[in-house]
Image (tube, rainbow, N blue to C red; front, side, top):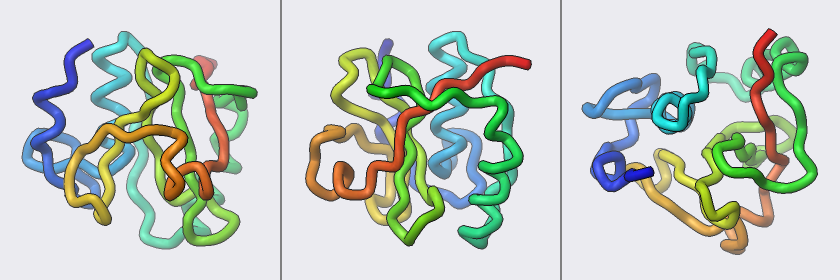
Length: 128
């Protein structure tokens, strides 16, 4: 799969198109290209709301023991709640994400010290 066109997209909170994306907007687009239909969610401002959303949607996701291509990778950088998501790529060792810290879409290693320290798990969406 080709991602080069995504790498120029800047971070935009709530963004869902080429003008700007947030982490979930990017996951939606990569999943779509991989033939996976993910539900869209609003981007809550409060990490507790994100955690509550995750609890409410837990039945839709299966936690994986290791990364699989096109599964979600969750990060908890601000405490116990997941506050950032990316999508694992075909190699199972890298992920694509969009964050305000990086300012744009990037591809990084799951083993990078910044990300491996706050990695909260891998998840696969299950249709209901």
